Amino acid sequence: MTTTGFSRRALLGGAGAGLAVGAAGGALAHAAAVPATPSGPPALGAARVDWQGPHQAGITQPQQARVQLAAFDLAPTAGRAGLRGLLKEWSQTIARLTVGEPAGNHENQIALDAGPSSLTVTVGFGPSLFDKTGLADRRPAALAPLPAFPLDALDPARGDGDLWVQIGADDALVAFHALRVLQQQAAPAATVRWQMAGFARTPGATAEPMTGRNLMGQLDGTNNPKPTDPDFAAKVFATGPDWMAGGSYLVLRRIRMLLDDWENLPTDRQERVIGRRKSDGAPLSGGTERTAVDLAGQNPDGTLAIPADAHIRVAAPAANGGAAMLRRGFSYADGTLPDGSPDAGLLFLAFQADPARGFVPVQQKLARADGLSRFLRHEASGLYAVPPGVAGGEGYLGQALLEG
Image 1 (cartoon, rainbow, N blue to C red):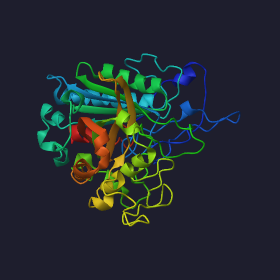
Image 2: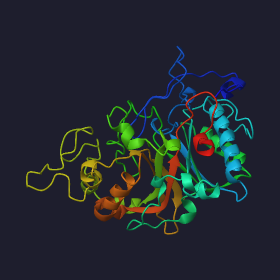
Image 3: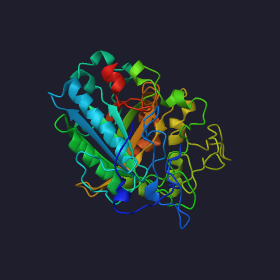
Image 4: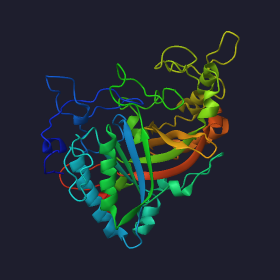
């Protein structure tokens, strides 16, 4: 899709350039960027991610420093025509914002003096959207409701929704600006159902790129599938139905961490709950962070090096029939609860080809046998079909569904 207009930087005479360095949670790809200026280090805000391609941006790209998540419900009168108009406008807006241009309709100048900052916008469809638009016969079987899991305490008001949006950027104002524009453009066809904000390590915050840490202090993302894996596409991207070929399915879970309880554990106990050293992420069976976990490894006294209920043992693909997901989670911190404990944890995001073969069997096992479950509360949930990207030229997100 072609775009017009001046970049937000150009409007103020600025011209930073460069490529953001570093990534959290297991970097998977590099953002395209303007070359660095010879007078200094690359400018973080100038990094750009191409929104066009066979897959939507925001899936295989490195995590940005900030994320805004939101779900929308269609108005009763919107129907298929209203949804089509909204997705066309959103697609045009995404094309503009990801290269640093003004949004067009509802431009509010919140991020006027910023570059694109690796902005990505990813859109998904909830199961309820298909009934509301007369497309029930085209709802994928993979959007079947997730089963109830032991210990879930889900708030329906903070989950599900007809439309889901993930907005990532390395600048908080850039991410909020994009969200605010999309919210205003959605009216009157759709209204916000819920909204969440999260964060990860800022690119460049460490001396060299490394796996990010979650709020428990653990490296998080070591065993993510990588695009270089021969079966990566089969694990992450759907092959059908026809309009979903090249898309993915996203499972969202808002997981509160019981940080007061966790932080009262000595470090060696925390490491046994996870199955990895806290300092460098190496498995307790030995080696470095990237060393394959030896689930049969033993300590000198004959006990398992990786305890039977350790998180990495219970979650390992080898222990779950090869089930795997591409995790792209962000931390959140929303103040304190009435009892004074932190309302903080993980916005778990996992992309996969089929939730019935990815998230569901793994979560069923984690809920039963994972020692880490004692320190977690699953409080919100959602499942969305993330359609393929716009491969080039004219088009809009979801076009194959709405016009196929």
